[in-house]
Image 1 (tube, rainbow, N blue to C red):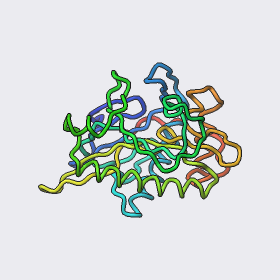
Image 2 (cartoon, rainbow, N blue to C red; image 1 turned 180 degrees about the vertical axis):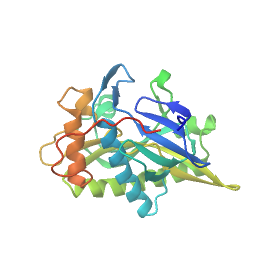
Image 3 (cartoon, rainbow, N blue to C red; image 1 turned 30 degrees about the horizontal axis):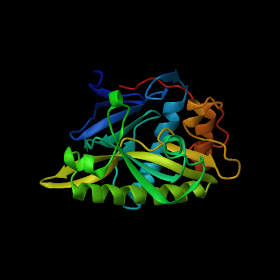
Image 4 (cartoon, one colour; image 1 turned 90 degrees about the horizontal axis):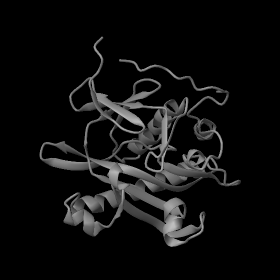
Length: 253
């Protein structure tokens, strides 16, 4: 069988042409990066866990009427997704102060915010994904005002869903980032959740102990990233409770 055509390779995923028009195969790598790829490593099993966890969250969102690009999981590392035009923004929703937010505003990590705060970053690795305002977004035509209204609504709905799901298994959703894509049905445009939702893109803390169960484990050298992600998967019932090792399968073409 001929090898699929690669469309794009990022820090954590590879995109291939899908089997049908308008589809893409999204492959999850084991690569871990932090600080705009200044810190790098390969974590065995990370891609398998993120594939399963993103499937879990995207399916849950689809089921409650929040549209996503997710169609189905193909195997341990790949999922079939709908092709879309990615808006060049990272949408960050914060429920508690942490990371760059704490440093920027001098607020102690873990401080509960008075309400969810939504921030926007311009997607450009060379610039370090800088924080931007709605004025920048409008001025440079990255999204219309209607788009921004829809993006805010989608982000808050994802936050409500994710917060509830995580709280039910004893995990605090500190913050997360998502990407939004445009799809077209004839002349009609709508926005959908794209990319992934996983511990790579969320901050997740154990409610009782404050233990970090997200990529901060890698950023701050706090232990095994695979163990942290596996704990999230086990609590959600995504991986078998007796799973002790995540295998590293090869790419299926």
